[in-house]
Image (tube, rainbow over all chains, first blue to last red; front, side, top):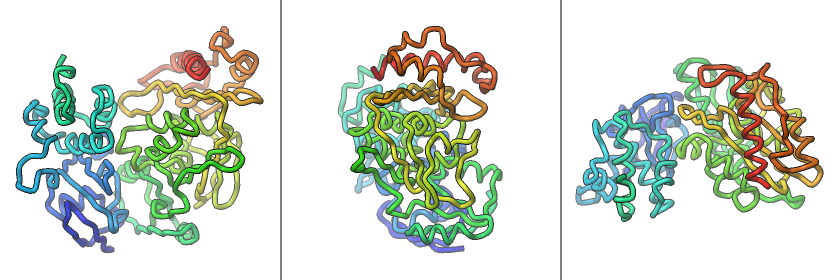
Length: 160
Length: 263
């Protein structure tokens, strides 16, 4: 066992970890942040996607021991300070960008990473960016629509 | 996943020392190794992460015009920072896996693993790049030694890859949509002294050069110059995604597309 100290959603935490402890285990089991989901555990579905130092990372495919001093942001850190939904979260609700909701935390984190680098993506860029996020309800259409809406663009172009 | 000790050295010397332990294994971005560990297909005693060593990261243009990429440089960084120097290489890096994979996966990790369907081996072989390790410098033609086999010894670390920049180049990837690996990928690079064509995803022997196409394209750099050239289906990979004949056909088609896109 060793110790790792990192910042999660602005809070500095220190936890005992094993060599094999994955970030997603640290988040869910160590910190009780169960908004980050484990879908496939084979690094394909993106339900566990979080931000590490501002970059999208699959938390099932990075060891906690890599994260000494890192800044991690999860879906629990996405709402506004007053508790209201962020622009992206609100757009997912407005556009019905979820069905069962299991993939949604990863989708929102993935969308946030995209819009941080590319504030007004084309629909094709949104779809290319979401290649690592699977929705088994196959609700992609409204997810793309939500991300277009969150970027302040006309959602009609994504509606057909 | 079996448990192991974890080391995260911040110098190459400390990484080399850690890798001398019994059953030590180097860890790049982990986008292949971590799923492998989860399946218990590997059980190292200690994992030595190479992600905290500054000298292994980054991209620069050397005085001789070659593009130097540190072994622990991520695909996302290559996609972004190589674009001005070697657009075909940046485009290849920007289409590996998905964005989250590209933020972690590294060029050194990809080359050390030498997956027969990985993208980077095609770029390295077609460019005639040099793989530089903490022990030797290996020409691409000598580095790849078959499926998952390379010139690397036990505990050897890829520190840098040096790419000669071609006059024109293009990579065509026929994506296997579930894995996002190449079902077949062809990298064509045209230099003043000739053309190199490297194929990934197709052969049971891993990445290979298509010498006949190189000769034809060296004389006439147009897709039409390939004429009725074809690779033998014998020795191509056959699985539920495609037969050996299908892959052989894709090699010919994608080579033509790459030449047209590069010209």
